[in-house]
Image (cartoon, rainbow, N blue to C red):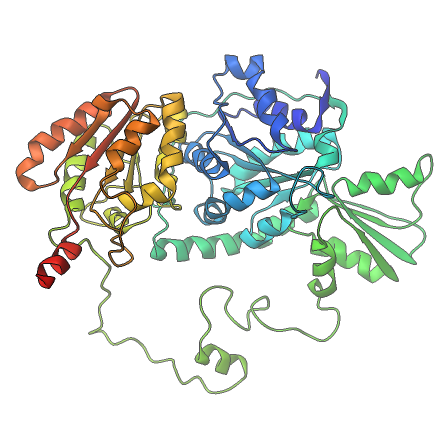
Length: 530
């Protein structure tokens, strides 16, 4: 295949294109900026109609990419390490939802703070979220790992982090290309609940995430990117990660390192390979760019001293809360809390209140969506999230605050039309405004329902910043005034509201429908006070 002289960032951008991505989502931040710029100027990207516009922030970028993955296509998200703080909410929750189309998070760390306010090591975020990491040691590996990461993501249905540092991102080397793959077709998840993080679903998905961990570690042990290079001098073993491997090798130009070397560039940490080094060598030197992630785990990872019991060995459960009974069992005491729940105590899932305005909003939306089929309505966090439950079954995602609009945008970018977002008035002003701005800048075909019940209903009826402002905010963001439709969700208005919804679903641009009626609970409180 052809060979190109590329920056590490450029190698990542080219690999993503060759891997068949349908979108790159990013917010500029050194040392990651050149990836998006490379794709934006790529003829290959233009011919493939790859989405490549900047997002309003890292959070909206990641949520849009999650939306594209939801629709079955491959997406790359790019940001610097501190940008991951902004995107932490969707990042953590996407580990629970998993991926559909290949989903890769490129995070560029900046040791020595060349252009940053801290030296944050993003591998800790990945460890925190239980997602795999690729950490290239050179530009060719940056290309190869990016290319492979999308298939890896789809194999395990999990997002993958690609972690680079400044020196790799901004240095140049020859890179051999691979075959360019076609883009995925739009294909929704078989499990329509996969992206609905209601607690009952999330608990199941979290256990599935935990169950993947041994498989991910097995992949690391067998990975072509992780290498155990034996040496004759066992007085010391050297563990190196990422670009630190190059720093080690530069000390042995023209000769062989006498010590055994374990090169780690794929995570989770390959425990078997670490164990081999610890067993064979008198001391171990760990060289890693960033924080001492491997070093910290090495000191406790193998339980080489006295046995350690707890969540890792199953003495305590890996998921859920602790309680006195679990501790009693772990201590060898009598289980005194094992009684079954009486049959008379029936489960009572939460439900929308009688008279809730959201009921009439979902009734109109469901009827309007009948001709398009399920899986096209993205929602958010609030009492309206209960629209995921029977009898409504109206929404298909709940990931984090503000994600409904940007996930609908990403799905629309992927070709899923119509794409609908449902968000509450308070959530809209919390983190939905920037999402809508992304849609307006690109005139993305999305229909956004902003359910205005005059309050923050889910958390007890606090005052909403959106009160009396939603229409003007949307107009100020650039939504065309004729496509800002205010409706009153009442049964007597159903036919009129249904016609408005149908009209806006057909519109090939940004439209906003604002169902406006006060929450029955806050109204009740007001009437009680009178």
